[in-house]
Image (cartoon, rainbow, N blue to C red; front, side, top):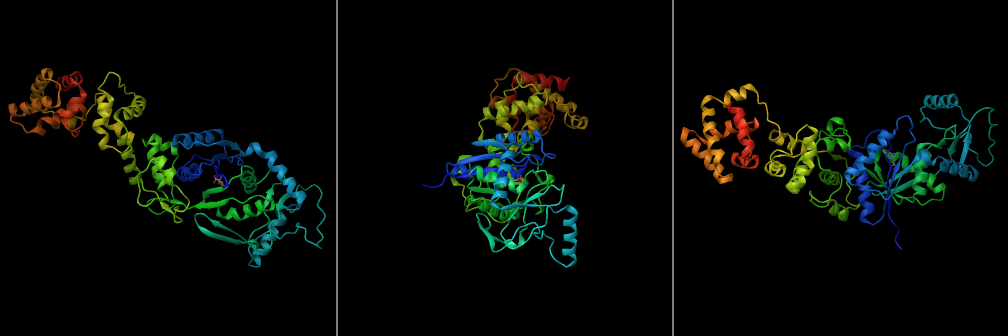
Length: 466
Ligand code: GLU
């Protein structure tokens, strides 16, 4: 029987879920889904000072928005303290961990001496028992830390599913502190116990964790646990090749929602950020799950490209039926205080504008003037609503009051007005745009009239001509 794939996403709720974390979550999720396995969500909240319920909620909301549903969890490390203590006690009994009574001052002294000799500062194993070695007497009144008895010799190596073979000399690794003097377990240890208990088969995480992996593997081995496969995802860089920062879009996933990106587009974009399937750029979530594998994750850093995300988002906006798009847009307009109910049909208006925008915010900006009469700047009015232009619009108003409300007839009404006043098309169309929407450029003017509807057009012309 083949092993059931179990992956996990293990964010620390010390900040929001940003684009890098979201990609890690997406890849872990997709790998589990691709294999019909399980995806587990674990909240690594042991940094109590920097974690908060609000940040946890932000992460859960972001996962939900991206559509990354988990099968088990969320598990919280703070609720698993007893279990970590139990494993520490077990390791102490088995001799794979030991008490160390070294005081911070002593450690500092040791380090200084090592530095003075030009050596790398490291723990010297003074409380580690060895055959034939007499350990010092534990000092009175000192709470010890617990250290992991790391193998002294040999190497610890793994075949990283992203980066290939990685190995460390055990001699390079200190005997890691796994419990503090008050008994609380340390970060690397909690991760190990969790991955073991949660029967994780594949760990995908950022490559800032590469240095933790040899320690985690050694502890897992000491526990007699199966070692999962590790894949360390390379960093995401900004378009300028620098580490991704807020300025580049390393903002909360939820901010992408605020800025009018669709989750489908963000998921598609993240899917291509360090993974590829030939030259395919546009694919659905289902297609991604079907294609996703670990072989095509690029070991080099990926670059965040805002223009590409915008381009993809525009595609996904246009994939939506106008009704569905209108439904997504209505709450955004309502949030701006715009009432769409009595105005032109929103699905007709968005159908007219969706070709021209890349985000829902741009779409809302474009259609807002249909629902709240704009107040164009004076100079625009002066330039385009001259007396001559107003006379033409007044005549056009008469035609529009009675003509059949069909695009061809609307177009004919404008043309007749042009010839009546000896004007060219733009000389009527531009003042008309300014009068109706407060801008000089819109989609084709007869289409604009069409979706606006007679009642609204006449009312706005009356205001402009008053
Ligand atoms: N909690 C860690 C982080 O947010 C991830 C640990 C892991 O995936 O092993 O960076």
